[in-house]
Structures are given as structure tokens and as C-alpha cells.
Length: 214
Length: 256
Ligand SMILES: [Fe+2]
Image (cartoon, rainbow over all chains, first blue to last red; front, side, top):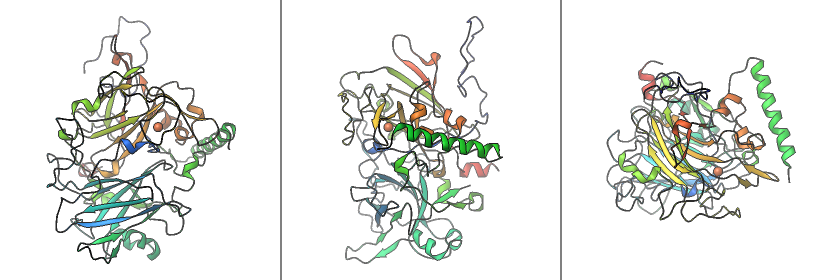
């Protein structure tokens, strides 16, 4: 954008910091935009139908990961939003939240391509259910990455869901009690596909290990 | 119920404690503390254990260093104009909010999804559980989304949201704000935040804005009125750049 000519205009108001055209490209910003809580009213904006159905429909290897989010008093958190990421296709493939070009409404995943991304609001019981494919990672023990948002949480939290125990740089650095908070428990069931229980405790006894990336 | 005066005393105490720490050589803290008692809902919803550090450069293939990809079919043109999603025009002051999405070095983040939601001009959300006795607007839902352009730019057309009461304490009011949800190149760059409007008299009373105890960081949550963005006979313009932190795979490749 060309620099506007302002010479003839008296008392030009100050240029807002970072305005395009007024700062050279790639000037280091003064700092990141701070986080703010997601609040209580994201429910009609962020969740989308099928947000937890990451596995393509009918996929024989699909697994279920489900559980509860609890606060420091052990009460369920009914207004948390969980996002899951486990890697997936790169640029050019359809996303998870496609729109219907005719109605403008929600269309979602195309039912075939795996996007690797899920978004699930906890229900009135503080419960969530994710159906996905078992994660794979280039090296080490596979896991799902989780980002937790909630009313009352000023800045989101990251954690990981490991579907199996094993050698892993992060897990091996933790005390056994804390390590256990990151490993999902395999559930026996007659449904014919694998199911795992993974609870998230925001505070207190059994508090989930949360991560900071540097 | 706690009074505003009591909350304000806590807000000032937290800010002064932070500023004293800075004066004593402490690091700048850009994000709000998760343990910020003036925001009452935070009390039982923050971890007491310290976060466990993951050194991204030690594991450049960590899943978190990439992120979900969104494309042109994830948005429609109407999604970024919140005033055209219904049959009629919404009530309120029509505004344009525009800015750039940047990484920590100021590089534009292109093709990233920005989602937004907000109250209507009367301060009411189109949400089942918002029982503030202000009118709903049948011509305004208050939800939008867009993809950033090649220069990281984004633009939304909407109406200025109203302030609204909440029950954190007695006579608690939120300054007018728009909620933003932003993706970067890496899952570690994920950001959910709120944008405020310049000069709002409610700023000092609001524990959510004040949970950012660093004054210059707090200022980065406030959009700038930009007369050059205002359109004659149509809308007022606000400029707000969004800067994401957190390591990404791209970052590491370039030898940070
Ligand atoms: Fe809000």
C-alpha cells in the first residue's frame, strides 16, 4: 500500500502502531497479542456439527476417546471447549469446517479426507467424545495434542493424550503420578472398536499435566 | 456479593505487584495470569502445578509445531460481513475492523482462519444462556469468519457491540469487545482473545481486560480508530493487528 500523502493536512492524527503502509514489512512487533478467556458465549460461534467426528465415517480403524473435564472442586466443567490436533494433510486439502456454497451453512469435512482436527464443546455433564484415527508421529510414542479453552480460563492450556504407555521424552521426565494423567485408559467394551477414557482435571488432586512450548 | 470497589482494590494490587516485579528486573509478561482472583471464575479453573516445558527445537517433528489447515471452502464471502447475514440491516453503528495477522517477527501469516463472535449493539448475545434483558436483533447473529490474505490482512464488517452486565461481582459490566479466535501455522500459535474499542470508560473496572497486568500488552488489545478506514456515508474504521507467539516448524527451519 503506498504511503498516503498527508503533507497538506494539518494536525495529522498519529499513525496507529503497525498500520500497513506505515511500517516496513517484517518489523518486529512489540509483543504478542495477549490471550483473553473464551468466555461463556462461544457456543453459537465456534463449535460445528460433527466437530468430534474426525475419523472418516465407517473407517475400520476408528477409535473413541472420551472423558470429563473437572475443576478444582471436582465439579464437571460444562463450558469448556476442547480442540484436538494430531497432524494431517497440508495445504490444498479441504478443511474441517467447509461451508455450503449454496446455503452458506455448515458443510464440514468431506467424509473421506482426514483433517486431523477436532473441536468439541463439553456437554452439560462436562463430557466430551472424540472419534478419530489412531495418531501416528514420525518418531516416538504417538499422541493427540489437546488445547483446552473454558470460561474462567484466561489463557488456553495444552496437554497430550497418549493412547499407550512407552518410552517418550516428555513422559519419561515426569513423576509416575503425573505421567499417568497423560495416558488414556483403554476401556473394555463390546462395541467392536477401541475406546479410551481420558479425563482432564484443571486443578487439584490428579491435576492434568499442562504444557508450555518454547 | 463482592462490590466493584473490592474488585478494583484487587485489580490495583495485582497490577502494582506486577509493576514492582518489573522494576526489580522481572520479565515482561504478555499474557494474563490464569490465576487472577478478581476474575472469580478463574479460581477453580487454573492449574496449581507449573506448566511442563517442551523444548520445541529438541523435537522439531512434534505434532504441535504444525497446525490444522483451512482453505477457501471453509469460508464464504458473506461470512466476513456480519451485517448481511439476514434479510434486513442490523441496528447499531456500522464498523469495519481490519488489520494484519503476524507472527512474533512481524511476518504476515497468510491463509489462516480468523473467527469472531460478539454481542449485538444492545449488548446481547444470540446465545440461549444470555439472559441480559436487552433486545435481541433479528437481523444480527454476531458470528463471522475469514481467511487472511497474502499479506496477512483481514477485514470484517459488523456493528459496534454494546457493553453488557455479568455476574462476576455486583454491578459488573464488560466493556464493548469482539471475541476473536485465530489459527497460525502451528498449533502452539493458537490464540483466543478479545478486541476492545479505544477510550472505553469501563476499562479500569473490568477484571478480564485487567487480567493482562502489563500496561503495554493490555494496550495491544485495544483497536485504533483509523479515519482512513472509515467509509463516507457508510461505516467507521478500526485497525487491529494480531500478533501470535509460540514456536512453529517454519520458525525452527529458519534457525531462530
Ligand atoms: Fe463477551
